Amino acid sequence: MTPENIKFSFPHKNVLVTGGTSGIGEAVSRAFADAGANVVFTGRDMQRGEDVLNTISSGSGHCAFIPGDLTESGFCDSLVQQAVQSMGSLDIVVNCAGVIYHAVAGETTDAQWNQTMNVNVNATFYVCRAALSTMIERGGVILNIASDAGLSASSHLAAYNASKGAVVQLSRSMARDYGQYNIRVIPICPGDVDTPMLRGEFNQLGVTAKEGLRESAQGVPLQRVCTPLEVAHLVLYAASDSAAFMSGYPLMLDAANRA
Image 1: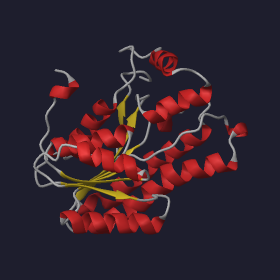
Image 2: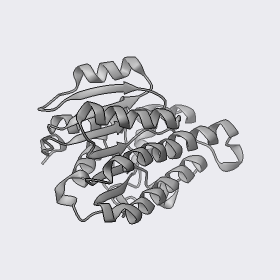
Image 3: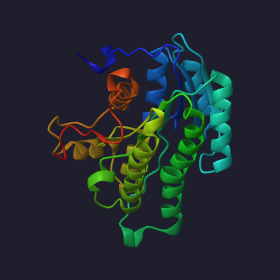
Image 4: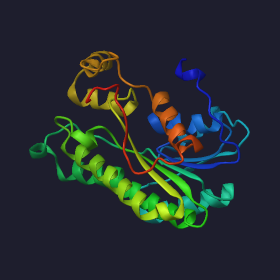
């Protein structure tokens, strides 16, 4: 069965996705919409957001785009409020927004470190905090896109490794603290995924996308990198009733590259 043929159904579910204008976030937004969910997604690029909105499959649900800067806690509070107002409630949150800089610790600048933490950690925390207050009465699912780099680290990615490790531990902490309210929280930990962010990392290294993807696939038993759609399908599974007793433990998607 190919990834395109895998089917999920989320009628009457209300979903908020961050980083929804590109890469994994865009794939997740489209996948939930295809599955019939109501979807609100956010990103900083207004034009890109409108382009995704105009081409996304609405399925049987409602789709909306809210632009803004997730590193501002006030916007994250407003984002969750607007999502609830737009859809009526909030069942699922997927935090996908992220940045990456290819640098060892000694070569990482203050600006690179701070932006990585602001986008990858702070924004995730702000959205989760706002969402938890709305989910506490009826339960819900929060899925945070972390990385296998947050579990075992990757070379020359000091800030990224630290940020994704923080996302993993934040997710596990919330899973323990909010499970009593029927709120499940899961960190999703893919390996390399063929996204604009990964290709931007190749650009930082001065290699072509073709060269970078070939090098990233070395040592992976399936001999390729993951696709955004494959991550999206794991997200939909984790958000579904089929995963109702799954919470806290990181879900890896790296084709046994680090087994």
